[in-house]
Length: 186
Picture 1 (cartoon, one colour):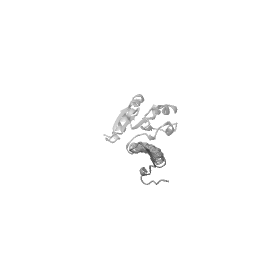
Picture 2: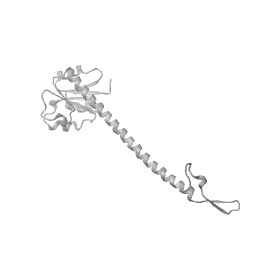
Picture 3: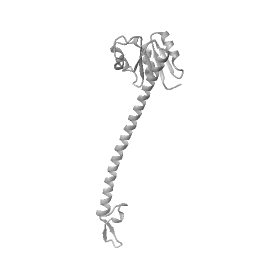
Picture 4: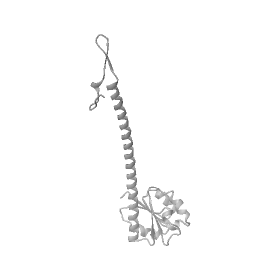
């Protein structure tokens, strides 16, 4: 089986059975004739085909689809053109009835491509965010290193090193012997 779970929710049991029979066996397919059960099945589905008759008015699909996982790609199955804009309502594509053969497989391929595209965009955004984070940390560390180099330079060259000899007398010398490699005293 694949990680692409497909939910087919149609009110007509015969149309539902015909639709499922045409889906490739490689997909984990769940079916229902109830919108309430469809909501439960969609919780971990990647692709869904929903019957237009579940949504009697133009406002209902948008509100209902807001509760669906945004990773789920949804097709509206209808026998007549919807009275609303399916894309604005949240559907990814429209499948005209009767749902059979190339029409169904074509819709499935489109939805899988959209799902893959979403995955690639999310992966890119994650990598870009990580790259930005790494770049920010690198710049901050460069600043810290520069600051520490400056402190080491001041301590090594400008601040005298105080030593005492065997008689307890103070002896001052500059720390030029401890300059970091590649640095010269001013």
